[in-house]
Image 1 (cartoon, rainbow, N blue to C red):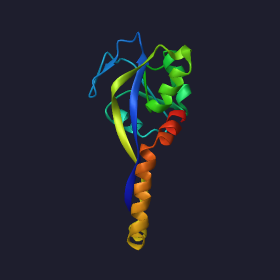
Image 2: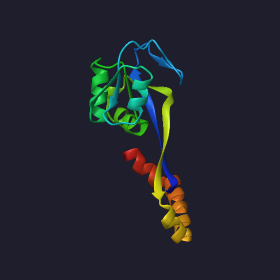
Image 3: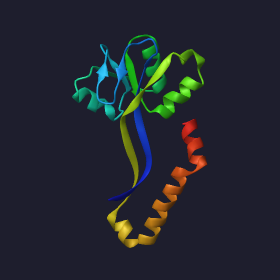
Length: 147
């Protein structure tokens, strides 16, 4: 299969502002508790393999935020587009702080088979060129903000 990148998505840690936890892009300082992550998110296994205590029992970002606010997890990991939107639109979550840099940046692709590309090379290029234009458009940025 050949592919074109549709979207780059990152996963970022969040903590409560009064927490001493910090993240330098490689390691934590002052992390003594659990990292909350939504069930099925791809970085979950990576965190577990690195020896972190992970809670992946929730199925949506809002539940993860509530676990953070209740002190049931020390940090959460999620896509900033989702969490930032929730924080910006709910003053009750103003005490949540994003930790940079991102833990992980992942490309998401539109896949085209070799057979399709070989049979339709011009169309394949048009598809990928269109994806690039859409990805950079203001409309896409607005849709991602809403998401």
